[in-house]
Length: 446
Image (cartoon, rainbow, N blue to C red; front, side, top):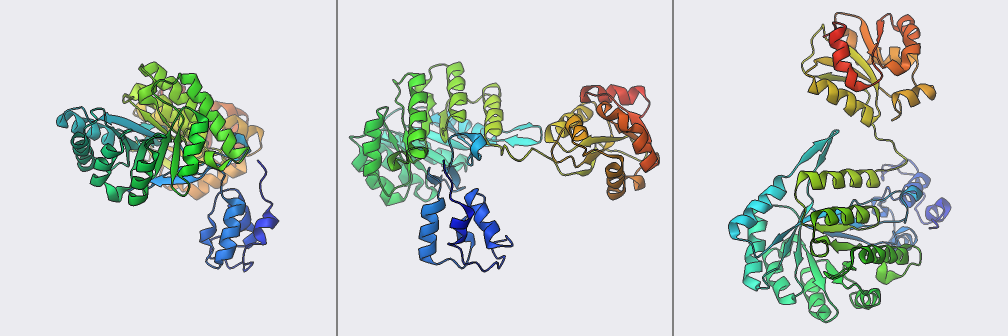
């Protein structure tokens, strides 16, 4: 997709170089606007005419939609392929609760979803949203289910029913929380549009026929819209094909009716857990903004969280931790000092292995610009002088009585240089972090 040049954007800016947008120059601000790293509203001196022109020039081809009191944002994507720029708003996982369950079961399930948390490699994974589905078709049952979930959890809600009267009953309970209304069919579209306008809620349009979906999107012009190109009877891979076609139409061909975020209700389509997980993984990679799931177990959700994290990370910025001195456990003046780089995966593997083994120690994190140990060595970033500077800045010498530094086995050739530059005794450790705890014990360092 062609992007506007920085000069085109710069010519629409005030050219004051005031820095009030937290960027020193207007040209730098123009670059951030093009990359999607800033919003033009951050400039206080833009006229309404300039805002309109900028919006037309730099707005993402896929519209952004927000919902919930916590304001989750979906859409706002600019490219078909991650390597062209990046994907901006990660896929929302919304777990389904049917209104046909007993009140106690609804409350228990909502509480489980609210408190669900997985920690892995320093990241906390939480469920984003709850979908309330009208399985009973009864307005009062649906209203009661929505009320119970609202009182139990503060997560953003999606209300799912094909009957506008049922949706009306549910949205009455949470009108101020901006839920997503899901889903309007061609024959109920008029009623759904009225409800969506009345409560200023995003509206999902549902049809596996893309021509019909296009007609519906045209009629819903002016609303915050999501597209659900599936139906309970659709074959899983036909759903994937529809999703890809919609996103290509929105970004490549700039068809405005398809320039909306995509929602997929996998709880209806996939009959078995393995198929639901398989479909979810495909749609995370291929453009789904919201997935409605029945899956609730850690073993099903953890792989999806990890996949989402990988797809939506910025490919041009390596995962890093802040360089400096870190404490593992409760170290004292006799505890070992271990050196590694600030590549996030290396850091969490090293510290994880040490914590699991109950080792009390200090870990010196070297700024390798997000590179692993061997890559940093090959790139010339790991040097004896840089390590000397890290030791001085971290003030580790004030915390330990010894002068012994354990370095990764991959940089053994720097041992003598580091010793000469720092005056510390350098001990070459194992190449793999899994061998570090036993190595420290064997060498009598802990």
